[in-house]
Length: 149
Image 1: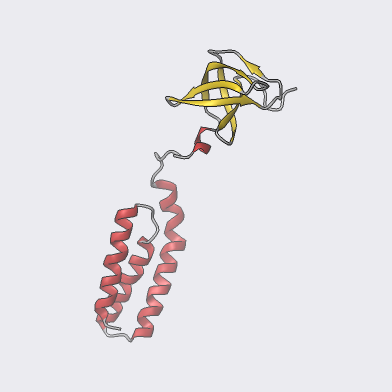
Image 2: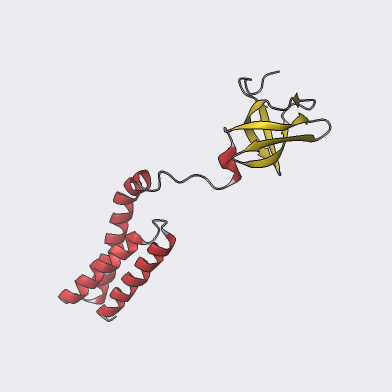
């Protein structure tokens, strides 16, 4: 394997990392860079591959937990599970029996119901999202304990 291939692998992995910003290939880019340098010094292909594997593994094991802890801290969940535990405002009376009710959360209107089969919550009440069932939020009045009978 020509040494230039390690440089090409390094560049490709670096481009993937820049595009995805997901801390997924940076460890292997470091391994490819070290394998490239090992090849420049004159070591054979098996030493280069070994250096690539060892350096990539060491970087992954030692630095990934630190990187995950300190990078992208401001990222918010973009999926619906990010709504669980958040407060919402009831915009239409919630009546679980009649399958009616809506809440507004983060500027979006969602259908809502309670966990109780005959649950009702009045308009303009602040509620907390307990879960999601299909396209409906499962809510309870703020201050009410989950599972309260």
